[in-house]
Image 1 (spheres, helix red, strand yellow):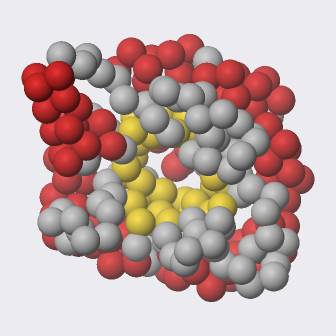
Image 2: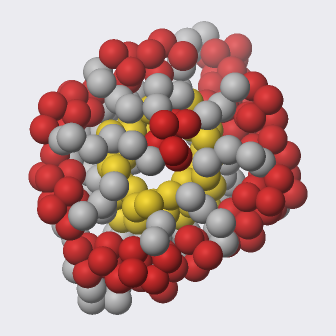
Amino acid sequence: MNFVFETLRGGLVVSCQAYPGEPMRNPETLTQIAEAAAIGGAAGIRAQGITDIRSIHDRVRLPQIGLWKDGDDDVFITPTLEHAIAVARAGAEIVAIDGTRRPRPDGLTLAETVQRLREATGTLIMADIGSLDDALAAVDAGVDCVSTTLCGYTGERPKTDGPDLEALADVVGRLSIPVFAEGRVHTPAQAHACREAGAFAVVVGTAITHPTTITGWFAAAVENGEER
């Protein structure tokens, strides 16, 4: 198996992202968060945006899953071949792209995107999927791995309170390539449950790297007696 996957196997990938307009939406800040995650034991980093990807690549010696969120359409995670090539050239060892069966903004099929991206860069390719059918189609398209990032966000699966363990187990049971668990993993217990369900590795973002949300959880618990 590829060295990048061997490094990530059984580990934690920390997603270092901030929403537009937030104080932390700064490449230096997010690079420092990635550095802190590496010290804490992360096996890999997931980041978005060319500047962030390049900065983290230069300073953090861990495999990086890169993506580029762009546009207002349903397909906005590295939505076109052009976006994907730019992510690869910024230094991401794995390029994450929308791996659903929805139309892509540039009119290419997922299979065409995968083929042309691999020809242009030779990079590893992750499909962010929303269902088992997406995962099967992504395998047919030739991706190297999948992630359950979009389960609960495309209309094919209900949005679960925590990670969609049922979808994860279904995908793991049908695929022979690495399956990453991602999406609403908010506690160490949930991360462990993802591994128990067969996840190759677990991606955690909000619960580690988004202080606005984490503060909201604690504030609600203190003010209203609501336990997360």
